[in-house]
Image 1 (cartoon, rainbow, N blue to C red):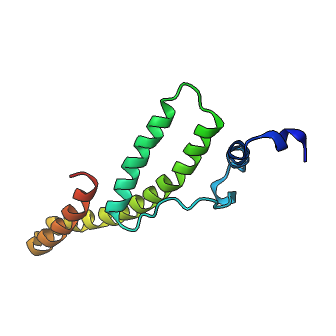
Image 2 (cartoon, rainbow, N blue to C red; image 1 turned 30 degrees about the horizontal axis):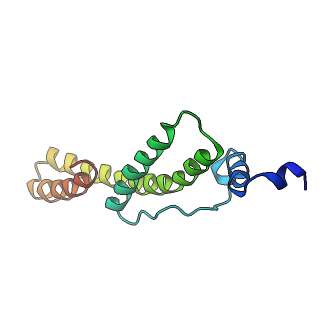
Image 3 (tube, helix red, strand yellow; image 1 turned 60 degrees about the horizontal axis):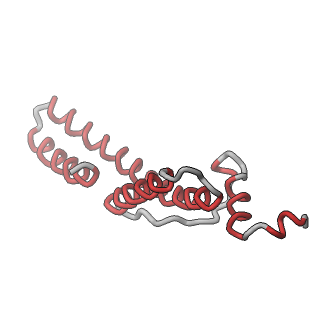
Length: 127
């Protein structure tokens, strides 16, 4: 092992190894789990909170290995949140399409039930 690696702090070494790894997400090992996003509400909350944390780190004049490591760790929670949000919004688009088609067909019962379903989900993202 080279003398440079022996003298690096452990955090810096981990940051260098993780940040300097493969560029493709499907080739990266999962070494952090990130916070779960089991529900849309949880995903939106984690997304908002971790975006604020990311902004705070980016406000630093210099991004040291410690800041890069923090950003790297934050991305796992953000990725979990976005995965849930994307999944939920895809379903939401399908529900909205049902409202659209029912409104064209003058099916007031379906419009009312599907529009309520749509609003209950959409309000979790933007109140």
